[in-house]
Image 1 (spheres, helix red, strand yellow):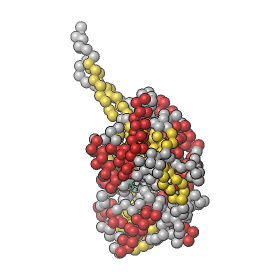
Image 2 (cartoon, rainbow, N blue to C red):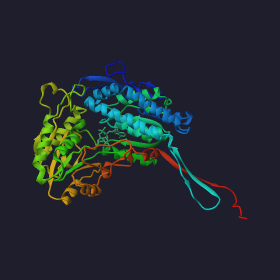
Image 3 (cartoon, rainbow, N blue to C red):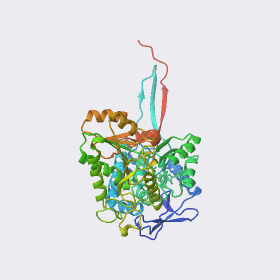
Image 4 (cartoon, helix red, strand yellow):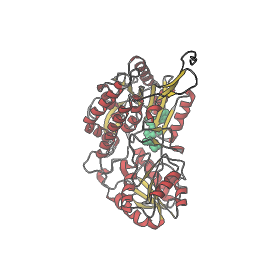
Length: 492
Ligand code: NAD
């Protein structure tokens, strides 16, 4: 299993690699050169059906759901251990496929290991409750797995975002069908093979490749689908919500963001600048929770922007596999066009380019999807570059005069994923965090999360949440059982 191998990456259904029924293949390109990288199978409606059937059978016939969870815990811990021992080859595969610097892929894979360990630890703790009721009765609840759960993942953190939802689903005893993004399916397939090695029964984890419109919709519309978790764009999220509503299937949507970063005048500007640089330029800005909308108090605008500009201009761009690279290419040519389209439009609306603003200038990077870290100032709040998710290394910088203005502008988009606040006054930070319309707030740090903390968006950023203890419960249904214990005995 290596990206240079001639063997195509296939679908993983019922515990084995299978070619798609149509025998179709797509050539994936290396984002740093746009040279062919590897061939991957393209699945169809029929493959989606086969995966659902395999999952449903495994759910019924294996004892994955039936035991007390200890077996699931062991398998998931083993999977975490196996992945940790092969972390380097998985990180390399992720980087080659998606483009991000190797050190970021290593970080992502470390996060995947930790996520598996966290949910492995919860697999034997899926408990119900006993509820006091009148009379000689016993009332209790049981948490049962849902059955077959469908998970649709995007390309920006390919394995991490897939495992973020499949780990709790597996821990709760479900059978999973995963559809990775068409551009970045490689680590998901390698991961499914590893799960088999770790003892996850055949059919409990299936991976189907293919287009969202065909394979994704076929999975959600299948009568065996008992829940859908989607991470991706708002537009597709709405379509998925419609499909799920037709079948009354529970739904988790993790969508886009337009994260405000609010810097108060008392902030430590050196730390804030580093955090802002990291929050918008890591993963070349291809992050739902990117800290993409800077709002800085007018009294510290110049010194802060100068610091962030210096960071942007010093970042080393290059292929993710090369040593010392700090920012890789974007995932595809289309993504470059999309990102630069926003920059050009903002310029036409009067924005000043503080830094970057176009493709990388180094001729050795000309064939790849490299965009320079970009800072725009003076962009009107109504501009698409301020209102919409750019999903690239582009920071817009605006100012505010007082707290109320900062809050009003921070909340003035349709998104509500993650907001960042920089101040030394923790009372102010707390008050501001409470009024931000976001599912998550980080104070004095770049965007960060842990498997044990809820990950959630509000407004246009999503429905439901992931991570944390309760994520396992989201993949269960609560059943109430009431026992009448017989006629009450009279006292004496
Ligand atoms: P996308 O919405 O284009 O695709 C996401 C996934 O959905 C892919 O696997 C795709 O094949 C599939 N899909 C597309 N159309 C479908 C359909 N009609 N039915 C079913 N599935 C379909 O998103 P993307 O371009 O892969 O990823 C970028 C987006 O993801 C950004 O908007 C970003 O903000 C969002 N995102 C959100 C989070 C979060 O946790 N909130 C995390 C990462 C990315």
